[in-house]
Image (cartoon, one colour):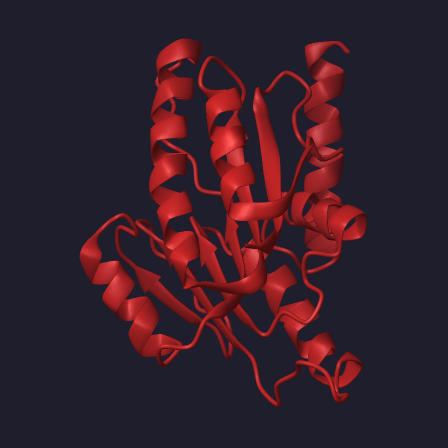
Length: 211
C-alpha cells in the first residue's frame, strides 16, 4: 500500500475513533482483542499499564460497566468495578477511574496497586506500554522485551484464572518470552489487530486463565 494511502487509512481510523468518543485509534486494537478472546469476561478489577492517552481505559470502563449487569448471577461477580491506569505521562482524567503518573517498574507502584485494590487480586491486566523507539529495530526490540519481562512480574497481582494482554515486538527474544508466558497461563495466544500498522513489528500476546 502506498505511503499516502497508508496515512489516509490511519486518518480514517483516527476519525472513526473520534466519532465513537475514543481518545485514540488504539481503542480498536483492544476491541479486536476482546472480540477474538473475550478478555473482559467477568472483569471488574482492571489494571492498565502505559495508559496515555486513555483510550484503553475508556474501553475497559465500557466493559466493566456492562459486566455489572451482565454477570449479576450466582457465579463470580461484583457490585462495583475498580480500574487503575498508569503512565509516566499525564493521563487526562476519566470519571470513576484512578489514573496516576509514575513509573510502573518501581516498588512504589506496587504499593499503589495494593492500596487502590485493597489487597484483592485483579481480574485483568492490560499493557499497551512501549519503550521510546530509537529507530534501531534490533535494540528497540531488545529493550521492549526487557520491559515486557518487568510487566510480566506484575501478573502476581492477577487472580487465579485471570487474563493478561501485553504488547510485544517480534524479534530475537520473542520465542523465549512466549514460553515464559506459557509457564504462567493455561492458554497463550498472539494477535496482530487489524488496526495495527502492517509494517510494525508489534504484536499482542494474550494470556488466558492464569495458573
